Length: 382
Image (cartoon, rainbow, N blue to C red):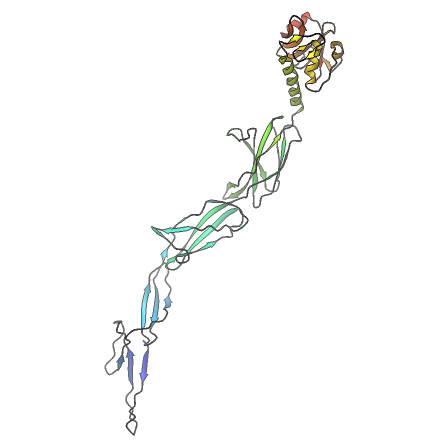
């Protein structure tokens, strides 16, 4: 306690009389804890204290109480207050922070809600927020640090997903394959390419191929030639051994180049399908129209479907392509018979189609009937 010393003298006496020094101790009327004036000591009391801003003499922690003191600016009286121990926020719940956030190129700084028990804490007063850099794909961090009457800290993590991927180019320059070139995605550890013949990527129709981050190009093999494939890609980031994927790119499509055998099979089918479609048509001498033709006119029309131009004459057609034996005969082969005067088309499965005669018209018959025609040559044009 602060004490004041006052010297009192009597001016009416010629010779100064020195009184004994009296100590005046300020005793607060509203603070019974302060010591009372001692006998022989003159005491004064502040009617109302004027306490200054408190001074923290001991900081409160999670383990112990703190202390603050006030001093009266008039009499020097001191008032002490106990500061309660800090409340630990380690059991607080952080919400309003998404578990996955898309990369933006800027620091991701979510504004969390912090609740302890039934009480929602107030930012700035009860806690402050500290963010990690949170600028790259991977793990983002929000740290809540207690302040005021709260202490301790609590961390909430989330995943920053890679940005949406992009496909730069797709082409099929080799049979049964497609080459996909990707655009680089910031912070990606790699890419996953999804491909399917179903444009909606129906479950069970989709296959995947993974591309390393430093490659950006993938060649997908064993595709079906002639088929159209739909392709999309997404970047991924690996965190804690788990891959986290960004959004898929825009879907692009590519028609796969066929193998030589596939190209041939497609041509053979086209030729045979046309011949079969003529069955039931009329035999027209020197005719060359759909379902209205003679024998060489029919075969001429069939091969014209794949760009092979034959003369309208059976004997002349016998010089085209290469000769094969009866046992080697395949669908799409040209049959010349009847002393080079008749032409027919083998359509497979032991059958052939031909414009037989005016009475029978265009018919499909078993190859066993060829024994009555006498085969001169079998020609493979495709």
